[in-house]
Length: 418
Image (cartoon, rainbow, N blue to C red; front, side):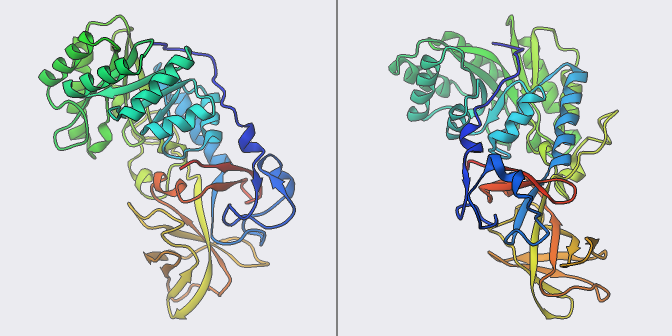
């Protein structure tokens, strides 16, 4: 198990040379342009160049959030393997790696394939590996690339035996590093009791093709410190019980990284703590704005900034106090909270804020129902900008997103692979 490494680089050339055309919704038509050349076009998202709707990434907010998390990790002597499922964007992951990220986290084997296709050297699969096709592919990757540093989870004796036997059949040529997953009753995967965890660890030690590299848990399945802290304390106790020269200890989403840091402080030096936060990258306007510890529970930090924003046109004002905007469930997340309307841009006028009280009441596939007060000045054709909630279900609706500066000028574009 490697605990430190030089800065990793992904191979982004195929992305940067991608031609922007009709395949990517909302981008302007016109002369051939590659992602590498996009800044040269001098497009402005709210200046009449883009088709609507469009979701943007704010460059300054991205940079702030990446630097803020990197600073926290450096201050506490821990590592970060950001969860790639948030954006599935190699360009954004490269920014995180350049800021010092230790590796990248994946949730499924096909996500591991994406990161490997772009040359990721270290991937943590935060899930059990049990399907034969996935196990065989991982065995091939490990055989073909001796430098590939890979981890996956185990939480049952049956899973250990299945993994071991399939690796045997696949003629695995080096041990697979596994992490003992600790779970929460009523939650997702993971050992529910210390006795079960001991049995799984013993099964790994008895296997032919596995090595126990560490312990893993995910505290974000619960939503209060009163439930999270006892879980993390149980995870810590199992770490202390295991007799290993080196041990990777990993937990932490974007809601409670402060509790993970507090729980694992003071662990022996043989324990290498890795956070797996993902949504901190872009933050959001509602859910993570409410639960994030940055600027509050994490001492010495400023709040994270919202990097995702969706813009739609006012299509119709069919009755007083109701505007139909041109975006819907195909374009924005709606699993946690609906978009939060904030800004208006009318052609030829300055950007302005919406009056307090404007809200999105519901969404259809391509329409948003926005209610607003009597004093609001809206016209058909105005653009409305909204904050969003839950980055994980925002990125997967867009194959290509423009990156904008503070004046909404397009300075880059990032691809996603969902």
